[in-house]
Length: 345
Image (cartoon, rainbow, N blue to C red; front, side, top):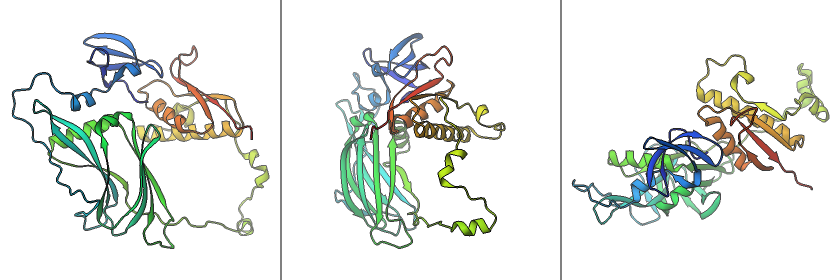
C-alpha cells in the first residue's frame, strides 16, 4: 500500500500538511491536520515531499542561496568510471537542480546511468515503466568499468510509481555462466525524496541502487536416476499420486505467526514477515490449483506491513479477479478477501 500510519501527507484541495493516523480501507484513511481528525480518500492526499522540492516559495527566505549542483557529466553515452575492482552493477540517479525566481533550489529531472563496475561487459535490455506501463526502452551494451547514460526522467513523473527492468547477458558468452539474468528496481517516491534530502545535506551528486554483485552461474542439471536413489534407501513417490501428499486447500488462512509456528520469539520482524509471506504463497497456489472461487487471508491490522506486502503481490498475481479489504464483523479490517478467475481453455 502507498501509505502507512504515521506518514506525513498533503491535503490536495487545501494545500495543508498533516499525518495519517489510521488506514480505514483500500481507499480511505483517517488523517490529522492541525489537531483536527477527519477521513479522506487516498486520491485527495499526497506525500508533501514533491511539493517541497518543486513548489516555488511565495516569499524568498533571507538567507544566502544554496549551492546549485552543476551537471558536469559529459553528454556522451559511455564514459569510464573510477572503479578499479569488481563492485557489481548499479543504477545511478543524478538529480538536475535549478534555481527558481527566488533563488530556491528545485529538482527538474533525473539523469539515469547504468554503472558497470566489473571487469566484464554486458548486453542489456532496459525498460522503464510508470504503473506497469512501459514509458522508455533501450537495447544496448555497456563495457567493463564503464558508465552508460540511458535517459532523463522528468522529476514530476516520479510520483507515478517509477520502476525499471533490465535483462543482462554477457557480451562474450561463457558456458559456465547463465544465458541471461533479469533484475528489477522499484523506486518509491517517499524514499527517493528522502535520499535527495540526504544527498543535498552531504553535498553529493549521485544516488546509487545496486542491481547485482556478480553475474550468476548457469543452473546445474541436478537430475539423478531414480534407481540410484531407490537403491540408496530413499522412498520414491509416484508422481501420479502426488496429490496424496499435498495438503487440502483452505478458504480461510490465518497468517498470524502464532498460527504458523510454535516457537518464534527468536525471530526478527523481517524473518517473521518472510515466513508469513511464504505461508501466503503456499495457500494461494493451492487455492488456484483446486479452482477455489475465493479465499480470505487474515493478516491483522498492526502497522499494516503484512497487508501492504500481500496487496502488492495480489496486484501482479495472475488469476486474481479482485481483492477487497473492507470491514467485517469477524475480522474488522484485518483480513483481505481474494476472488479468482480461471481461463475457460
